[in-house]
Image 1 (spheres, rainbow, N blue to C red):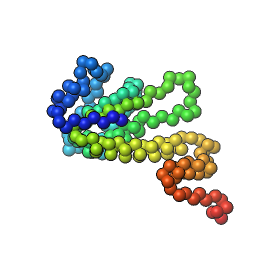
Image 2 (tube, one colour):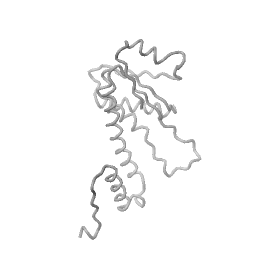
Image 3 (tube, rainbow, N blue to C red):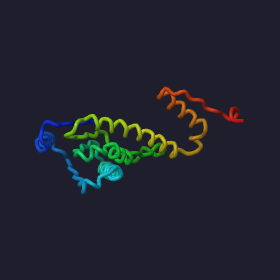
Image 4 (cartoon, one colour):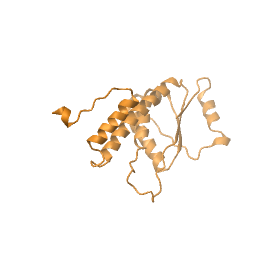
Length: 174
């Protein structure tokens, strides 16, 4: 995810700089936010989801989002919505069908500083990695995700985060 920030230039100059004859986008999607007082975390997540679904349905790999001040406040939720719809579980599918096109690049463009956006991106990525791990565990059949498999996954997570883990088996539980 690339974060662009421009607090020195005026909005119109900034947009003109990003969209010039040399780098015209193939498509422009305009999403109205409506009344700014009604913009909240739920709305932001739903908006991210709708934009993500549109990108997925239209096989868009590169997406740029021009953020206003209200969106920056709910950036984490917006990104969660955007990333939630990108999830696919095709572990058991044949490769004969056309592969799913996923969003590969997301540019977040803002006039405010980049620090709040970077923090939101980090938090959203962390939350989504946990959500996607759980989705995978639920989608695998029970003959794959058994007690040993869950113990192995728990050990991996503990090791990655430098936690000490104790897994009790049947003998220890008796």
